[in-house]
Image (cartoon, rainbow, N blue to C red; front, side, top):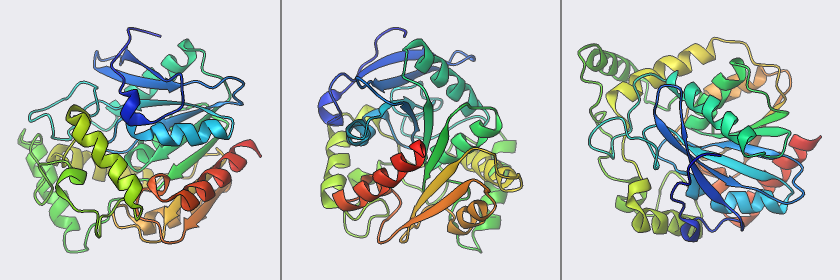
Length: 310
């Protein structure tokens, strides 16, 4: 792989041997990938993180996958983590076009092959990464099987706010004002300014503390709210994907019963239409089923790896 990149192994708490590399998308945007290889691995999970996330956040997940025989390779998408930020302030989550994320996917897969990441590959997409991953399957991403964690196949919005979100975000984008925080979103990192009580990510205090420690130790990894441009692009992309038939790839999707961030109805609808797909509900879980308590994580990861290898 390419030039070494910074990697904060201490806060990641991942398996031994992890390392980071800079890679370049075909439009010259610099990205970062992190690879946790495993000796004797039975395959590699291509882990596609959500909006605001960064590679180190999945160190513990990589360790749990390694314990189940799989290596992990993940990415900092454009505009977040240590990848090139696309707008100011740096905490603003912005992208010009959602289709640009597919440039990142192609660079990620090329990096995996260059690194000799053990095949077969499996897709694991969380939240926004689930949206990007679904599009990648349509674009021909070659994986043996796919798993999604609370995939962003729609955004949870109150019915009266949906037309407002569509109208305002598209208007801002059309007037060249897309690189501004969407109204009502935070201009600071969620886990830093919000309390654990009633947070929308996890019910597990230890995993919440893990995320807080990372954000405090390396604030340059973090992100705040999305831009109006990102919102416009996300609404268009999720609507377009909703209208498409499901891919042929064998797929399992995990969804917490307490989900409050992504559109649950869209996920249920998609999985009823996925011939080789299955929806697994995780009782009591919030948005991040991979960041819940040990029992929930074990349940999800055991079922996921079993599904991958069936």
